[in-house]
Image (cartoon, rainbow, N blue to C red; front, side, top):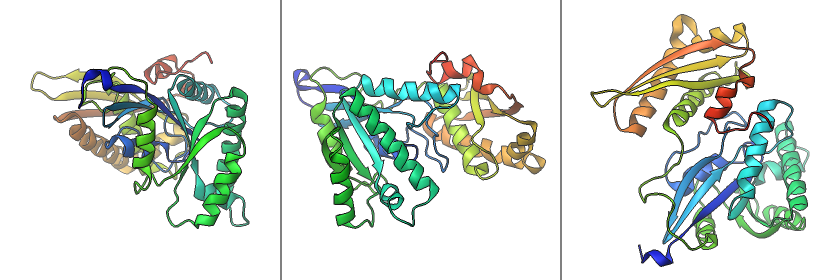
Length: 315
């Protein structure tokens, strides 16, 4: 790295509809697993900061919750958090699922494709009102026809909210290095905000809860609607160097509790084992993980859970 006066550091917000690939992009840019990635839409609940390095620049990535029309308190808090992250950033990338958007315009598009396109239109409208110019990144371009991508790029660019376009695949990495270099150039001059070896600014107890929640959805995403939360109730550093973590998995209805437990507790055992394995690798030390499943119809109104994820309860 060169002299301190040539260093750059700043914030880049990644915004987009649910399942546009934001978490995958943040993980690709940082080279490590920072945000959780599951089959469920809307899995990122708070602005996870990943830290990407490019030359003398440190890019602090704000991985925001997906933008959508918020009916419930939790949803409103997530959207307010997302817009807050975009407003304060030095650069903003609007990530669009190109494959889904193009499919939505044809007769083969699914309801999910059309919903994704509608969410993108909602974001565009909000950006038009804010007057903020952002970078457009068309994601999931693998196997897409170039003429279709160029047509979509032109269509979105004519909305007037973008000043440049990148075509990328967050999954394979195609085009991501070019986007990273551009973001690095947009960071203001100044000393780095984090140590060179740090890749995320997420409290460990929050990251631990998110990892367990990811395992819940990987295992029971078909049976369990989007109605579970995980809270780290205890995180203790043991004298032998290990970590003792206690977590509560909240579901909204009594009928959902057996789904998470599984026959003879086998599902919960699998969730705990997979979460413990990942936490052991992440923390680089032995982890003792204890999981409890509780029914709480009002967990979405819990101030403590909002505080855990850095969300504003009173939005």
